[in-house]
Image (cartoon, rainbow, N blue to C red):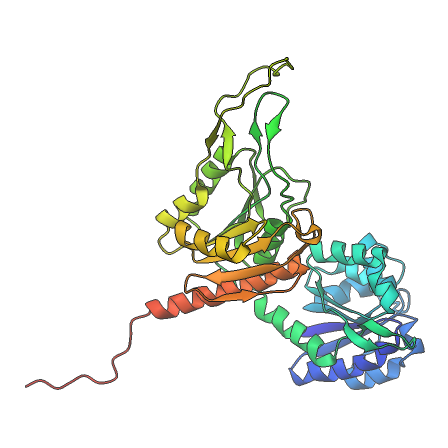
Length: 410
């Protein structure tokens, strides 16, 4: 398999030669690309001699009939940028194509991994954080930089991740690719809206980001994905079958319609627990007397799925403002789930609108694992790894046991 190793202008560029060698030892063929700035830190000759391929760095250096950046993008199986400067991250995020590497990125349909390296202040700058957020939403994997002594003389986050960590990210990407091929996945996301009258409604603050991240990750692993989504401002991942709904009853209908044909169901939506008993056909007018709104419970979709499941693997979410572990465990048992994901929505950086999530994952055997605050795209990768592992264990337990010895009769 072929990997494009792109090197940008950073002191950490010297580590790219080590990354190249580690990838070669795993059997990958390396196609080197360098920006003009990168050549100030390491010579093209180094990567050419190690890889056995010429270094490409100029949009106009190849005068053959083929368009080099498109040809190279189609020839490779992964684009790895290590180190990735704040400049190239900004170009990737904003779609700027003013050099070979940024143009190559826009032509690439294979997985992309970036390993950022920069000054600590640049790493924490709001512009860089926003660009990383955009890239993660597009499915780009980010190998977080390490912390320590930097070239500028300061200490902190920003140094290029160790080559072994970059290698592991590459290997994990290829392990995940097509791991869900042939599987049918049903995911819910976003809020539901319960109308009071033609103007007003009851809803919640769910952004849908977690569910959309889960759908994008499942699709990238080869699954056939149906995403049932309440109203959000998000663009659905490419290749996902999007079913738009508004109310809890509409979501229930769509979920039950697709459930029987699904292998894995992940209920990440924040479904309204209550709906108005009576919906006014006209706008409710303001009066002296305080209006009284009578509510009734909506259908418990998750509990119904837990009762109906046969071979399906059902995952629920417990977004709590307190006692996360206890509430998640209770929900796991009451709903008959295979896995539950609990998270505390009270901190500002972990609320519905946040791009980050800190979760605790509990399975039906009672085993739990807690994770630090991570981007929701990273949480999605972790959850699918766990779902795949649990599904494989369950399948292994269901296989008939082989008989090593058949006793003689007579």
